[in-house]
Image (cartoon, rainbow, N blue to C red; front, side, top):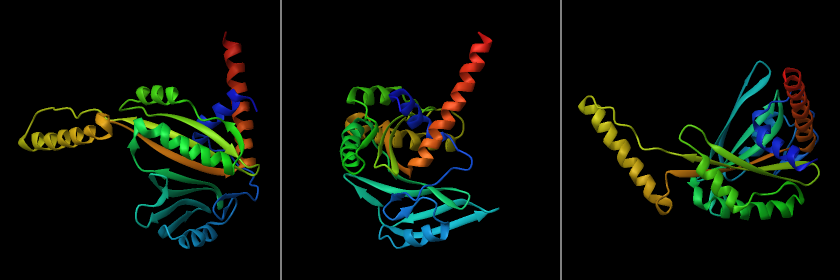
Length: 243
């Protein structure tokens, strides 16, 4: 797999929902296995000390949501704390995701580097390397209040693929539109909250980041690659016909 193809997949795959994916019996995270039924996954999750309660909602023969409530702050990973979410294809587990809370954008590279180093030991096949600190800085500055920006790296042990995604956000100060006393009071509260947040992270608290770790089977990942390549080929052909 070329670097360009790998990068394209790592950025786009989370937005892509393949139809009828093929699941290998890959262990995704801890003892959660790709293709497992929701009641089995729920039982395993509820046995974890970090998980308080799990509710599974099934409609029309498919899992619509698996609501996972955490004990305390969640799963500690270095200086971060992560929540868990699951994704299903019908009644078969397809992905497990760990998501951090909101962190300082200017600390994202150091945090991601520590995670990346540990992932590379457990999943030694590097599908896409972690970007440089310079690229992290550029991505952070590209984020706006209406458009987040992310970058990804990928790792595999043969059966399982792990996608490390860092997403950057920016908050702008609230706008004052005038009006009633209540409107002014609400603006003052919002402004105070914004200024307080901005003082964190060495004065850059209006720029934040989130780290996500997504686990899926290698066969599901490769199917995504093939389908994205097919879609891109159709787009290239359509462009060629119109030029």
